[in-house]
Image (cartoon, rainbow, N blue to C red; front, side, top):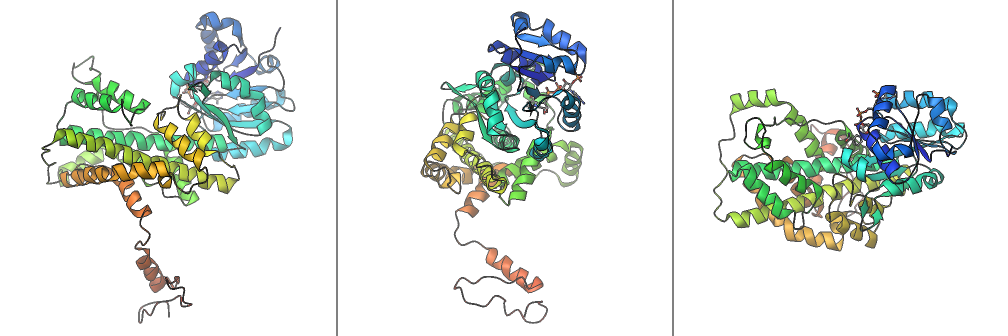
Length: 477
Ligand code: NAP
């Protein structure tokens, strides 16, 4: 019997959809799931694709069904389960076989797993997959990290299943060991910021302009025809238009304002800090989700403190203000993406990955949650200057920031004066203002550090004197 081109373990939501996608693109695939009943259910529901699928009930049978060197996708619950599954698989594998963790792994786990397999003759790929269930079934964005040789073994199958943007596949090899999972983590951090900023703009339209969900849907619908065109704006319009089947009003108005998270946003903030990169908009977005989850505490605080004793100002020219909101969202989004790419540039240096920035922007243009035409512009900016210090100083994005930051300033001011929370938008504005200012205020912080800790400072004039004349009470002389 012809052997399968690839194997997949884990027929949950993502694994079963990915397996069907692989089969549909003409690749024979062997599948295995810890609970065997799920394998039967999967095959029974596979319809015409059944001929491309080799269902296996034991690991031994599964491994034997795949053409060596065997690429095996592990698409199961992230964390310890992956280590356990790898241990179970290992005794059946041969030199050159490739275990591919396609779940949402912490890239530090991926680096550990990669290193642990080094002397065994087996290889490991950490593969970020974005696009959720729908993406897995019809074309995800795929971020691959591992050896180039192992990538060559899986390139054909992965290229066949990835999303396409203008016929270009949204998959590529991004570097050794943890590169793929790191890039996926930052993708998710940017996604958190993008979603939070959209939610803050929605808050201004709802609580500032007192617009209904359907009226706000119209606004997002218009924006989706312009510079903000993206999957997230598109689904925001759809969500706002949906009607609650129980109470009959807008569905969104009936949903608790408590957002969940699974950890990748938090990891991206932790890694930004580890790399010494300011990712303020992403940090604000993760913090906003945490605050959102503390609903009881927020309600109690509202009872004690009340809402701010200001109300959003009346807007005389609604059309102009909505145009400001559109530009403000674009400006803030540029800030968040610039921060995410800066974190990746720092990690690339730290881990010696040589991450290809234009390629990353390219493979995010379709298939993933943050897909948008805006990423096409990021691709061209990084293609022209792949080593630029920050996206916002590339000619194209500097121009966009200059065109839109005044609107962001007006929107953040309107929200602050009206008592509406816009932490991510405000963080992006603060980031622009701090990043573009050649002479900041840390001279005072250095003086304070020298005063209490004799930490010393450098002088503007370069003179060889590194402590201040602080006098009594200071630890520096
Ligand atoms: P899911 O539907 O909950 O399925 C979980 C799968 O993991 C099942 O096949 C389950 O097998 C298996 N599993 C759990 N513990 C195991 C263990 N100890 N040993 C072996 N198998 C075990 O999960 P999912 O949504 O497909 O997510 C899978 C991975 O993809 C996760 O890392 C997730 O973060 C990531 N991911 C998810 C999405 C998404 O939108 N859902 C998007 C991107 C990435 P049994 O049937 O035997 O329980």
